[in-house]
Amino acid sequence: MPCCKTNISNKASGDKFFASEFNELNQAVNNNADEVESRLGALESVSPAYVKLRSAASQDANGIADLAIEWDVQEIEPVNITHSTGGQNSTITIQSDGVYSFSGAINYYGTTGNYRLTTRVSFMVNGVTLPSYFDGSYIRASSGSFNSAVNFSILLDLNAGDTVQILSKRLSTVTGNGVTTDGTTLSVFKLPW
Image 1 (cartoon, one colour):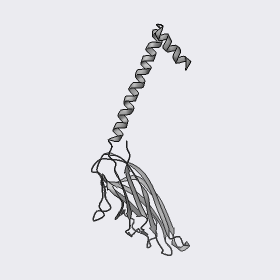
Image 2 (image 1 turned 30 degrees about the horizontal axis):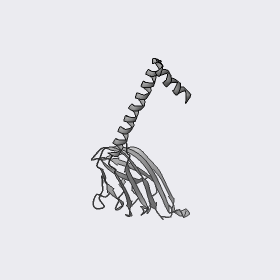
Image 3 (image 1 turned 90 degrees about the vertical axis):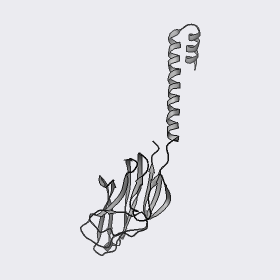
Image 4 (image 1 turned 30 degrees about the vertical axis):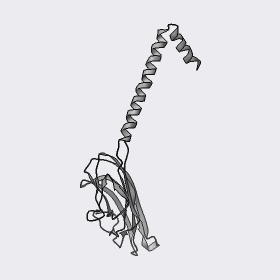
């Protein structure tokens, strides 16, 4: 670049303006390099946290009260997240502060003749149901539509020791034989920043 060579040669010939500008620019580049290295180093020290769960339980989906989904199969063993496939298998406990991604699907099945199942999926953190929710899963068994699902994806800013449950409840007025099915899945991972 001729411009830069000219500026540098002007520095050599005594042009102090270009010399000071050059030095400031050089210092700014070096400072940013230190900041970038610092941020990359911080990312390397972040411990991963993740788990992939599945529900093999066939849970009654007819209630109008919240039902905590049971996660009784660990498809990927938890790292820095506590979850048990035994007694309290609907509860996920966070081990370190951070922003976590929760994504998955609650699958439903029902065959009652006049059934029109619609459901809501929501999240409970430390015993408090969050205002965000996911509606869907229309089953109309009389038309031969027996399967449906509610997909969800949410980011939660959590602290070490926080507990999370995924809830489901029926919104429709007609009751029937709807249940959650084996394809119900959940993936949780901590974002690296």
